Length: 110
Image (cartoon, rainbow, N blue to C red; front, side, top):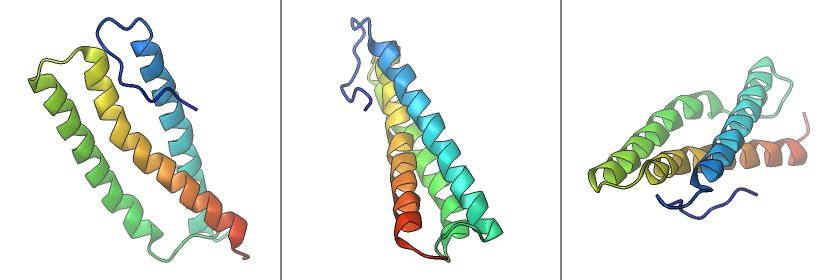
């Protein structure tokens, strides 16, 4: 499980926490992409609105991430804090998608 505390400017482990969060983000995103592609091919159970959902949620997640990063930047926060603020909304979406799609696959028969 990644470190969920907010890194500060004096925290020597701040960039390490951000690196772990980015690694989790990449792994979850790849898992979600794979499950959705298999769903489009018909070999993985996905909902009927999954294609529309994958487009619309990207816009909201990126907008939320940019707003969080701007908020931290305009209040003159350290780079570690700005990066952590930008990663957090994206991680929430990818984590939720991975859990939802995995749960659907475990409970649904094709």
